[in-house]
Amino acid sequence: MKRVVAVALALGCVFAAPAFAALKPGAVAPDFTASAAVGGKEFTFSLADALKKGPVVLYFFPKAFTKGCTAEAHEFAEAADRFAAAGATLIGMSADDIGTLHQFSTQECSAKFPVAADPDLKVIRAYDSTLVRTGSTDIADRISYVIAPDGKIIYAYADRNPDKHVENTLTAIHEFEAKAKK
Image 1 (cartoon, rainbow, N blue to C red):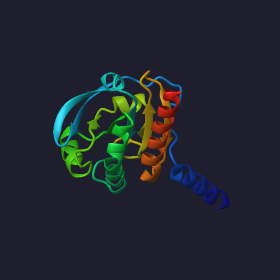
Image 2 (image 1 turned 120 degrees about the vertical axis):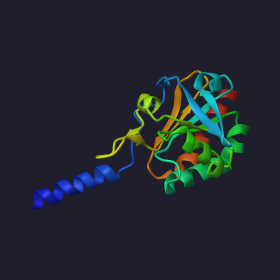
Image 3 (image 1 turned 180 degrees about the vertical axis):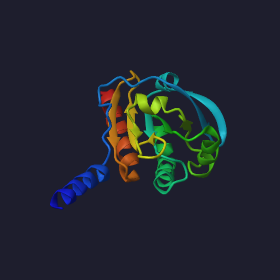
Image 4 (image 1 turned 90 degrees about the vertical axis):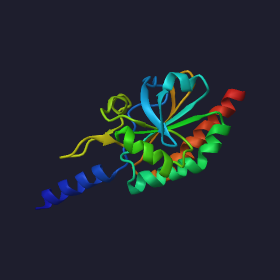
């Protein structure tokens, strides 16, 4: 009985712990294009094109219109002008279909930044941002990356709690700006 309790506690700790981003700072960010929506309007987002303008904050989220993802989208929307002022492009991505993200981009992102659809999980897997759920379809985990214009990851943060993703990525952008000015 003690062994069963110990195994259950160990598994509980593993599944309750924050996720860990597999792509570390210094790694080359996988290039991608994806269908995206901002303010309900669809377009094709290209990482390569966005990087020509400056750093990119790419954040993965599990599912549109869920409590944590809605809260995170609201926080990113509130900070969108600060990211833009720092020269950064902001984009969210999930395994949701583009139709769902049309609504999410308007309602929860306040048309402040785009969200991209990756229903086949090609980009999510390339960034090792998959959350495997038993008995269900795989979805994205909650992971935020900051990618420098040279295509290298300069910051990665993984935590299923959405609270620190905006603050941490904005800090990473400001640190990047400060280094670039030197």
